[in-house]
Image 1 (cartoon, chains in turn red, cyan):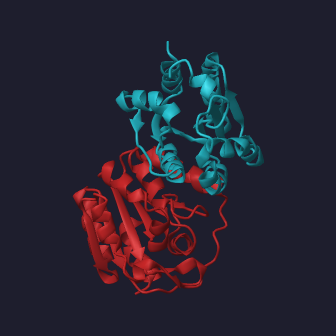
Image 2 (cartoon, rainbow over the protein chains, first blue to last red):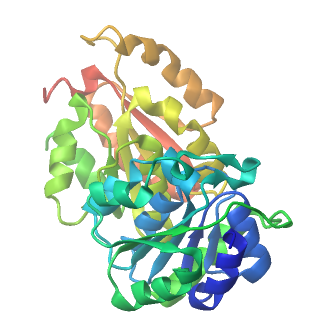
Length: 186
Length: 166
């Protein structure tokens, strides 16, 4: 399975949840498959999906799912100790780990080599870390939402992309509709 | 009222409820006050761009944010300021320790001080420079202006400004 296959499977689970989606193809795929005001698409700023997600989870009560990638977590490693030490039980960090920089031509990342993001997250103090196969992602994500415990999920999948259109929504509109939805739910 | 109390008072008055910090010696007093204050959630960050990500999330979650950091970190935040805070039109007060100005003891700090205002000007970030202790009285108005404008706004605070409490 590649990232788009995982997204297709988890859409029924995340569709009505607040989602912060990583820069590049992950956001474009989510936008194409299931555009919702509850999705915050990152159009720039590699690495910060988990930080935005944590800040959001700490500031309101709805469940927040940050969909991140291995390359983005590697570029913002400082996020994991911050997540571990500021527990938000309405926060789930889903790292789709395909061992490559998908948006830039599938160059390998170090997680396809010796580096384990799950072990790093544990070493940083994250208490609920689950590494799973791509096919198990939906079930594990559903369980994490039910449990209401901050969880880091590392879903290991194949590298690869599908053709997707660019997101032609103004960033201020993405932000505005996301905030209106959050306000209505809190 | 001390400078630090005055600054904290302005934050609370402007309904700031989420503050992230990367420490600086000049900022230790205000960070200590923040940490103790139950009206404000203090989430220390490991790097300033990470901190701005946290602030963006907090803002969208309905809590007014503020980041406190040193001017040496402006370089690492440029992409985040431009492609997140400015691009999505979010307000963000950036309270900055302006190291490397007159009174500085660490020579290397001067190297970033000479670029600080030029970088902020290049990014078109409204910038205020607190030099005299009384300048702290401007903080309330600047915070109000920041959330009205929905822009990142820099408040540079130099050694002379903090000298009365160190």
